[in-house]
Image (cartoon, rainbow, N blue to C red):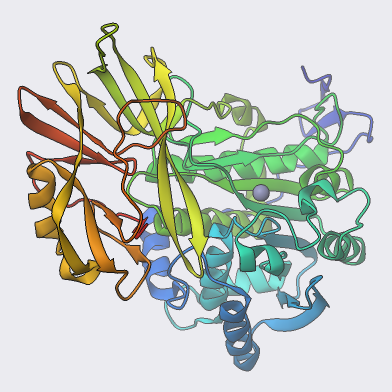
Length: 501
Ligand SMILES: [Zn+2]
């Protein structure tokens, strides 16, 4: 519980919040509220200014360097190299505006959390735009704010697509000590800039859902605590108000798909420390959205909510929001899987069993691309769990997949249509003589070279997920590497991220 005491004084002109960090007045009367945009306008802006050179999540430092050069040449944003990563990759700060309110925004301190970095580059393009009907927004931001952007704080992690830096440090556990190269840099910059507002930009796992719903959490937010008691002072209240505004906008994009991140005080975390250093700090975690594996829609939502928050900081208009509405946003819960198969008959000779199965697909990075490995995550009564794909297999049984007897020359010889044909005939695996142009492929099949394919013969925890669901010799679904293919619909709906084994 919050221990905040709320005092209404006199005519109600001021609200005082008492906390261990002091009492500060908050004047609600002095802000202009003229510039807010709607989702259609944000969509138009994002379409216009989306950075076309960033198209998926596994961009690297060299992609960013090229963009930094472009922005340096434009001369609208001031570009500074503020340091080097442990492995000597340059870290940049881009600065915009000459106003009094200082805002720091940093992204990708976890190398495998890139969504907001893409959105920041979209935002840079917007700031460099002109004569599009939105110059008044740019003027507002420029005159009232001093924006300090640090995109891709952890370039070494991004190179490997890992959370930690090259010294194996989780930068978000290094705010207190600043021992890592990049964590130390962010800490130093915060002390130099002394921002009044902070944006701590991350991605969270895609398996969080909004409690009581099957909806993936598309964005989670947090006004991090500055003490164990999670008290609310003026600084944290500002972050809460900004979040109320962001949530209002997000609800229009993705209703009931916003949650709060765990608000336990984390003394080593940057968000918590920025809050205690006096910056109203907002954590944005990009989560999951069905049909958006590369998070390009979520990137747009980041663009919209960050731009809206900046407009509202510039105007002071975020103070119109009731900070208590922040408490209405539910916390993340973790009941989601990539695929849930319900009521499947997996009886064996020894016992009959009709139950539910959950499958997840974990990603492995290959250069700037990736493949997945689908595995059985859970077996049993999963009535309280949900799947991005969720199928009722009542009346269906587990059917083992077969390997096609003929060997193809390479994976490039097999079309999507042919793959579906093979699945319909009960073949889940195909042998090829050689790999083809790429070790990765997008077919809904298990493709093997010299490895002997072993079909999934039974459903076991962490086991493979290559099998069929059928009834009386009719195959209804293929489960290939954790992806579900509806064999009746006979269409390919997903870009399968598989590899030649
Ligand atoms: Zn993170």
